[in-house]
Amino acid sequence: MADEQHTKRQKSGRHSKRQSGRPERGYAIVALDGPTDPVNVGHTLRAAMCFDTRMVVLGNPDPAINLRRLSTDPGRTWRHTPVMSVENIFESLPYRCIPVAIELTDDAEDLVDFQHPERACYIFGPENSSLSKETLAKCDHVLKIPVDLPLNLAATVNVVLYDRMLKMRRPELKPGGNNPHTTR
Ligand SMILES: C[S@@+](CC[C@H](N)C(=O)[O-])C[C@H]1O[C@@H](n2cnc3c(N)ncnc32)[C@H](O)[C@@H]1O
Image 1 (cartoon, rainbow, N blue to C red):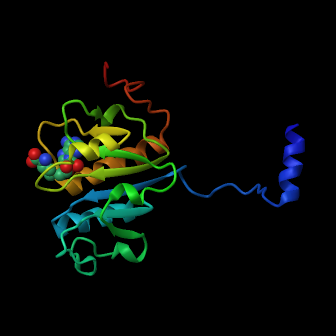
Image 2: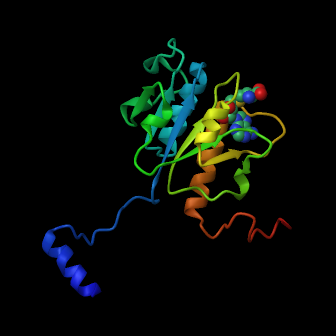
């Protein structure tokens, strides 16, 4: 039966033995909800390029933010990674992409123990405020970096993307599992 399907696929021209050369399955998108500080937007774009994020979405960015003049994004990420400015971040979600809110709330899931979805859009709040309740409710997960005080927005982006890269590359590092340096 498997052989039959194999032959059918070959006949229809849809079969390829070629493996994806990408280092990981799926993709990450970063979305900033209402960013106001060009310094943070630049650092976020730089992180997006460094961590090979597929797209950056800016939800209602401050109109004064000029993507071509971000001192913290010397590589001009927009030339290499799609950057979109939108009114509604959720309308820009690709097919079966999981929205993950990043917010320091009491009942958020702990990033340390989190298994990242294959296709994720990480949504971050504005510098001087937080993601709205409506936004949190629309997300499949709310995640926090377990520290006592809020981090800088762009620092948070870097931590989340690094955590994703680490867990994608080292699946044997099961959250809460086999680290001999912790008793959890
Ligand atoms: C600088 S924080 C906003 C300030 C914060 N709401 C306050 O009370 O001062 C901007 C965004 O960074 C993210 N953020 C900062 N620290 C975080 C943490 N420890 N865990 C998860 N998200 C965090 C959230 O997306 C937040 O909306």
